[in-house]
Image (cartoon, rainbow, N blue to C red; front, side, top):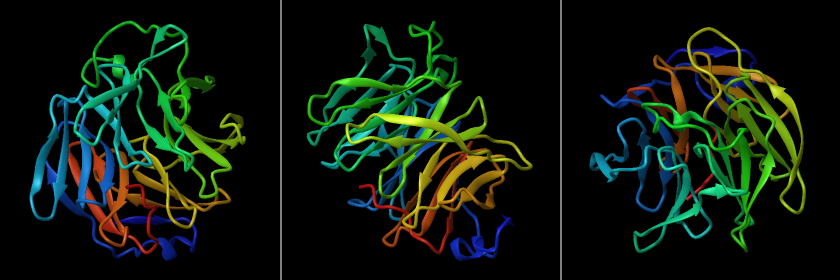
Length: 295
């Protein structure tokens, strides 16, 4: 595998000889990678194909949900229920334990959401999601006019279920992830090509929003999927593949991928296999530092 080492600390995270394996291909545009530890399966979206798929060593590629509302990002809540962002339906849904689908966010202040894109759950059960306009474009969603006049990030209260707007000064908000101690929320902006950092208050509101890092380099791709590992290193898609940053924003290096990367997650029993959703394919490689357990 080809990696770009920008700081020697990167060698602690990944071996520059670790192979990059193409697990499966032939999709339209893969997104929303999420590891289900209960079943040892990877959940991911084939967004324009309007299908959520699963992959496992035992069964290979199978269908999880079709149609999917052109779902994008996924996350598990504290009860182990799968949350999904539906581009075509402009909503966040929760799959209940009985398999039924429960919409938990569709409108704010009387207006339909743009197209929820990516999602994360805080340890208190609060749900945060980004709401750009990509799902109102043909192919990646359903072509239609925008109801809101901004692209924001929202929070769903864990007790009341009420939706609040926590930030709205974005071009196109996309990937988001908490620091390990949850005092910071990182949100990237695909239009601006940067990662911002916000301080998280006790009531769940956020403030600040300074630019924290700018993924730069050769190759195609931009800010999209973003997560942190078990040692607070931040991974973010960007030009050429996946950019990795130390907790102090030092750019450590890039995991090069031959297709444009949209998202990724860690899986397998030790959470040291990095599964990568990249355009028409699903890839994986091994890393030295485990990801965080989500399911």
